[in-house]
Structures are given as C-alpha cells and as structure tokens.
Length: 243
Length: 243
DNA sequence: CACGGCACTGAACGTGTGTTTAGTCTATTG
DNA sequence: CAATAGACTAAACACACGTTCAGTGCCGTG
Image 1 (cartoon, rainbow over the protein chains, first blue to last red):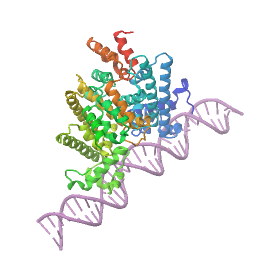
Image 2: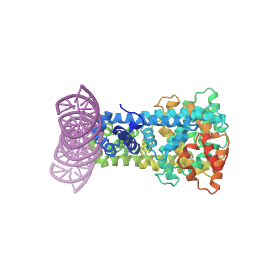
Image 3: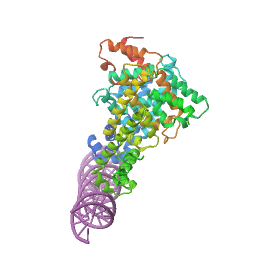
Image 4: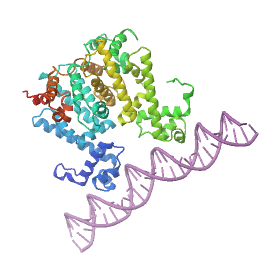
C-alpha cells in the first residue's frame, strides 16, 4: 500500500520484497519458504503475511516491482540517448538479482515473465526495424517474427546457461559468455548455417502452392528445419509428394 | 509404446514408472505428489515406495528409462539407415510424454537433462559435419560450438514455447510451430540477421589483436552481439575504434 | 495522560506431503 | 499341504510449510 518510490522505500516491506526477489531468483518460488525470506530480511515470518497478505501476494509485489524497475531502466536509457535497451538490461544483468528473478519467472511461467517477454519482443522488433534502416541488419518481411524467435532463443540460452557453459568448459557460476560462445553466435547470426537457400525456397514453394503446410510439417518439422539441414531438405521435398 | 522387453515390461513397477513420466512431464517433479502417480497408475502410494524406495528413486528410474529409450530410438534410427536422429526424436515428439519429461527435467535442472543435452550436442555436431560434407551446411571452424548453441536455442525455444506461441497467435497447448515460426527460423538460419560481416570482423580483430576479450565484453556482450546489431556494432567497433 | 492504531513477534494451527509400518492376499516352492 | 516370500494396501506418522492468532511495544493524537 504505502509504497513510495525513493526515500520511503527502505521500509521493512521493501526490505522483505528485496529479499524475496533474491531468494525467488535463486531457488524459485516454490522452493523458497516464507521463513527463509523473513530470516534473510531480518524479520519474523508473520510480518510478511501482515504486509503482503500471503506468499502469493508477496510474489505479486515482487513482479510489479521488478517489471516497473525494468521499464524505468529502459525508459531512462532511451531518454538519455542510449537507444539500446539491451545495454540497459545488460547493465543490471551482471550480478543483479532481478535478472535471476525474471529468469526464474520465465522458467516457472509466471505472469510477470509473460509481460516481460512480450515487452522485450516488441521492443526488439522496433529496434531491429531501426537497425535495418541504418543498414546494420538485413531487411526482411518477417522482422517482428524474427524478433520473437531471437528473444526466445536468447532467453532460452540463458535458461540453459548451465549446460552451455559446461559444453564450453566454463565454470557453471559464470554469467558471462565465453569467447567461443560469442564467436559461434556471431557466426550463426552473420551467415546462417545453411549452405544456400534451398530449404527456404522449398518452404516458400510449399506455402505458395496453396497446400496448408502445418499438417505436413507439424511438430517434427520444428526439429527438421533446424541445424539438420539434411532432414529439412528431405522433409521439405518429400512432404510435397508423400502424404 | 510397446517395448523390446514387451512381456516383462507391463509390471506394476513399469506402469508406475510410466505414469510418473507422464505426471512429472506435465507438472514437474515437485508439484507432482506420490499419491497422484499412484492413483494414475491404479495402485496405492505405498507400492511406489516399496518398489523405488523413495520419490527420488522413482525419478532416478524415470531418468534412466527415458535416457535409455532415447538412446535406443536414436541408435535404431542410425542402424536403419536414417542418419537423422532428429527425425527419430521428432517421431516421439508429438504427444509422447518423454519429450515433456525431458523438457521439464531441463527446466528443473536434473541430471538426466544434462546427459541428454550433452548427448544431443555431440550428436548434432557429428550430424552437422556430415551435412557440411554433403554441401547442405556452410563449412565452419566452429561447427561443434555452433551445434551447442543451436541445441541450446532449440531447447530454449521449446521451454518458452508458451510465450512464442502467444506471440504467433497460436493456442498455447499446441506443440506444433506455426508457419510464421518456421519461416522466421528458416530465414535466420539461411541468411543470418546482420547485413554484413562487420561485427564478426570486429570480433575477429579483437581476438587476434591479442587483447583478452572477456574483460571488455563480459556479460553485457551477450545481449549486444545479439539481434541488436546496433549495439553490437557500437560495442565491437568502439573497441577497435570505429565511427 | 489515556487511548487507539500500527509494526512487529512468538507460538500455535491445519494441511499436504513423503514415508513408515503392520498387515492381507497371492502364488510359488519344498 | 504348509510355509515362505513378495506384491500390495490401509492407516498412521513425522515433518515442513503457509497461515492465523493473541499478544507487545511504540508512536502520534485527543
């Protein structure tokens, strides 16, 4: 209720909320107990319920705060002339609990995560349009869709950070991508992975041929048009005649 | 569904295990109760403990079974001449609980997930090498690293499927990617997103200049070399001193 | 000063959960 | 046929968790 922004913000409620963001971000909502949060904040468990009504209420407060903070940070970056919201996000990314909190939310499928995802996708799309005009990105008809995919991939990669880091021989705790990681991403985003546009062409042909593609390609296609160009080719071709 | 050791496999323990795979895959390990699994399998909760010792033991059994089943499926595909393991995986993907189970494991960070991830990355790398020889994929020095990234992106996209589907206006329950999804992925993997190779070049220069890059690029770079070509430019270029 | 509201605490309550235990039923074996 | 082992169940146990409750001290207000 009494959630003033700056000076008033160090109230017990605020400290509880901040502790909760840290704990939720580390262990997730379910595995974090009210008692843990209370202890970390230096209060009794009862006070949490007194201020937030329930554990779910506390989460709602955390969601609201984190989302607002993110929006503020991004707006601030835009206003200050830095037209790159990712830089702003990156600024917090380092060790800030908010990033962990949002990643956990994304992992657990909370409402805040959906809000964040949609907002970021939208923003990425706008940013990409701008970058196209400046000649830094390839023009495309599907810029918005590509932004969605790229945001999903990016967050997905962060969610699986542990495994990626292991594959690249980095310590699991490190948040920073390794040079090998960066190089691989750069290469994919610069040149793609396919040798030519045969798969894209095949797909276009499929689409323009009037045949509704989802039935033929459905789930499996998701796997096939991926790095296994081989099967993508075979599938795209076979799908026309067979079935 | 039916298995190699078909007759012996329909024991109560096996049915419990299968029910557990379904339940764990839908709701996750923590939110699934032993009683639910028992009820779904048609037995009493006590029997689960009798056979598997504990809920964790049941999970271990599920992990082992799913991983073995995946390996079997992949080997079978290889032996039968289909050199594409993703096709095999795709075959199960549709509605099979195993895929959900593994995705949940990946989400929760179980050991089985790590095994699966590493195995798939390895296999993807081999497959990509083969595809390069056949002229379907671009040659590259970083094929293995790229495979890791692509596998991570793919799984990450599946983990965030809900949000991606929402962005593409599909029902959340559908596992199949929409045509818009496929098209966007194809475009990225065919052409990349950057207009030219300036970012890649900048990065290469950075690396060959002897300067250890991690300090300069660290966490934030993860965001910057991504779709926001703009900031990637600014970052990579400023370091080398560009406009 | 008396008083009422407020932040806050400590202990208890109720519930859901994994697990244990005692026991029944079935079937295989000597 | 008797006995033993294992599959299986019903009930209870133990514990952790979110939540409730009855207070206690503190501060501003009449």
